[in-house]
Length: 495
Image (cartoon, rainbow, N blue to C red; front, top):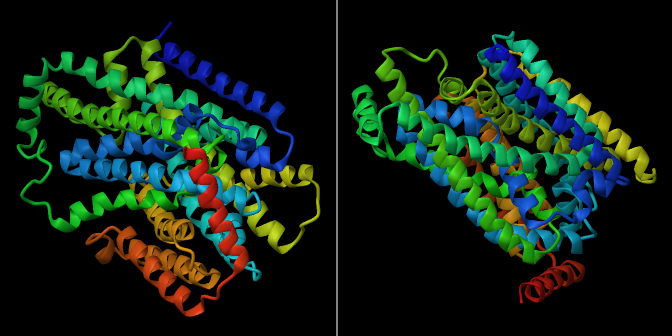
């Protein structure tokens, strides 16, 4: 067998496994709560690995290593910011959101939770939330499809667009039929593949580059400042922008929806430890992969054509073709886990938060599950159109969508969980302000090059939400009762 045949065999085995899990989940999905939230029965390990795999995407194995390969450890500030943000998200948001979404009329999406929590009889908050999710997730899903296209182009010499269509078709198939359960179960397998390969590639690579000492010398020969977190050229704004990625966690619907699906508050503690451990190993592996790659190509006296393919190229150089195929499957795992998570959340927003709010509230669950599957297909098609241009970089697309969600939803989620006086008008005004500021700032090169758009967007959302809430606040006994009930259940389940 040729090298490509071995690698293709590994990819095919992986794809069949994902479709098999999708079929298994399809048979366990009987109603809308199952399809959108897995019946609220996920265990700690499944929740943690699913959240991690959904979070990191192709950015972890392609975008971040590519940035480190080009610029050095100055890009590691993003990884540090993300780790801190993820930890605080698990600590502060996970337990409260798990309880509050059930207390607030068993909400199964973020927009429906905000609607129920704030008693928004106008439905404007729910619809606006759904639209924001739809807009920004189109860009986010597109980033995964770009990763898929680049993956097959660099790995097998396949046409970029053919690879994009192939990845999109498989991930849409198991997401469309299996829903949230399929997404979560496949994420567990994908998360394990990702962390194992991210550790294996740099560990084996260091032996190829002559050990740690020679590897460091080779890296410094390329750029003396590459191993410095704060090189002379870096500004405070660059570091703040990188660390600010952590703010985005509080508002990522495809991540925090896992908190709503976990079986109990007690499980969130174990899930936090598993999730953060997985994240630390994965991020360190991504950083080390890029640096080993710098040393390897310096020693070979050659250059890498596309920095974002460093993980793929090293995997093919270091391992037997079949093992290299498993390394390649890790890329697909990262890409597909995130695409699937985002598709199911976007489908939820379209059906649960826009369609049901505007048109039809009385149909049975089979009708809504069918429409949810149609929504998955439509969103995937639109995202593929955006991703059709291979010049779009993964990190830029991810960064734009991440900032949009973090700015629009992050402060609102935190305020809804910890502040009794948040109002529906305050939440709506803050959400719109945050989304607009992040969108305009991110699309204005002179501003985005100065400071990452999540910083002004997050601040705008927070300030507007608090000010408008203070102006429009009227005491509501039902809201007060639910807030107190949430605190009571939290205390009971933690003890």
